[in-house]
Length: 191
Picture 1 (cartoon, rainbow, N blue to C red):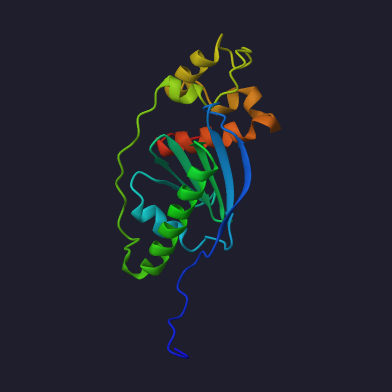
Picture 2 (cartoon, helix red, strand yellow):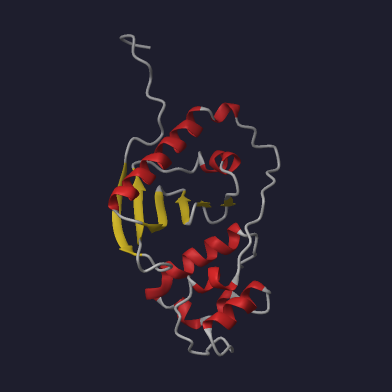
């Protein structure tokens, strides 16, 4: 220590909102895309270990978890997405909480045992949960008459996420990413 000051032990010093978009799952809410000032590769396994009911994709480089009705995804690149946010004020509060959680976990990472297999309670999804993240076109391209019927078949593993052609369109990439995160969180294989 020089000059009697403690070394800075925070990984993330700032998080800034990059985009505010309409929430795809709830049109009365907004969706936030934010970015930290640092990459988060080294802290993701530790966050996964301490956040209850989180899902971690080492290959994809992200963790996902639910906080109330919100789906939160933290990427190794530092990008953070949050769905179903009331307004910018709530977004700022949520992002500050996430920043503090990241920094607390980073500071205490030596005390977190990554060798323990994490047991988590699977969240239960219904067709309406899936329907919120579909394009809602009822186009029939998946072989079903309605998006709700497709959602039910997706949950029963009779359909794949690849069967929904509108989800492959660039304008629906946010829906697709959110749906994949939600399915992974519930323990579904989306590959």
